[in-house]
Length: 107
Image (cartoon, rainbow, N blue to C red; front, side, top):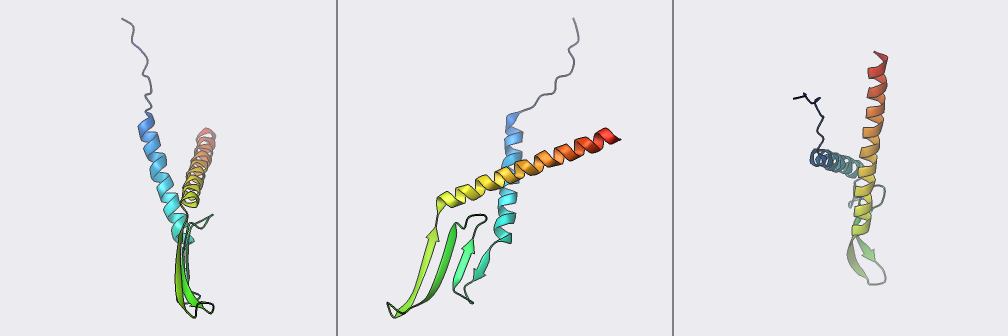
């Protein structure tokens, strides 16, 4: 019998899990960095980058002659932000692999 050369097995599940965790990490970092809670200053709270998917605010309405508040949540912008985070994470992985390959070939 002939010995088969070792085959490198790659499974898609660990790769997808890695991309999922990376996407969540990038999404969390971007959300924390661009979170603006200015309820005490101008009455607005905004969450999201590059698209704001959640807004909350309050203030005085001269038309109604009372204090009013609002909440806005836009799920399509949230999905867009998640897709942006996934694209950014994949771009980071691509640049990292390119740079590490260049450094490995130099030595």
